[in-house]
Length: 239
Image (cartoon, rainbow, N blue to C red; front, top):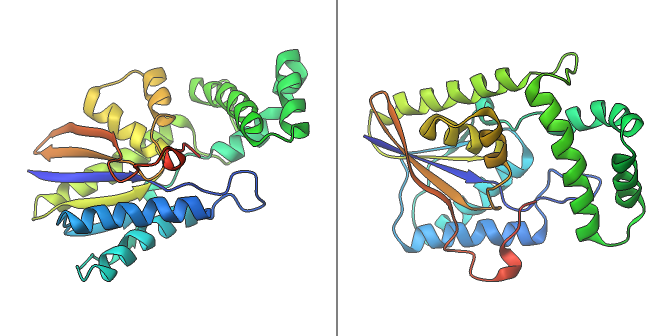
């Protein structure tokens, strides 16, 4: 039996020119996760990260917290199977057509572009984003040169299967990734439908972690979206 812990990256920089970087709040979230685990004696045999900067930075903050606590943390290895799905590319490719066909989408996009309120911009972006991702998942939106939803699922499943094989040796694995791969892990554990899986990809909080147990061919959910280290409401975010 082995345990695989998937960590959603800490809060990135939504609305800035470079979303992929952690914002100051995100760095605090990740540091608190590392301190929580180090304090409670949580150990991992192996540590992995998706290739995004927000994945790598989250892992680095956690590892730094272990180091400051005088506890060892394994070297973090980048694993491309845990890259997020190409949501931004799909959004940009599909938005022009969506705006042509939907007055509601045009209104929402105008608010996204013009509003001075950050929460309003996030709400409008999420509404447009979800519409386009549904089209991509169903196959109604195909972007040349970009993996399909089915290819994304297969990629993450390969990564999870690889970790299950690694875990049969000894010790636990931790993976720093995004909401998409965590949703696929939930699908694998709970046999979710396509649409339920998509909804799960939106549920993980920043710097929250989910735990799965792998035993032979079985892959079982132990805990989802756990965040005991985020004790202040300002630290509970989804971006």
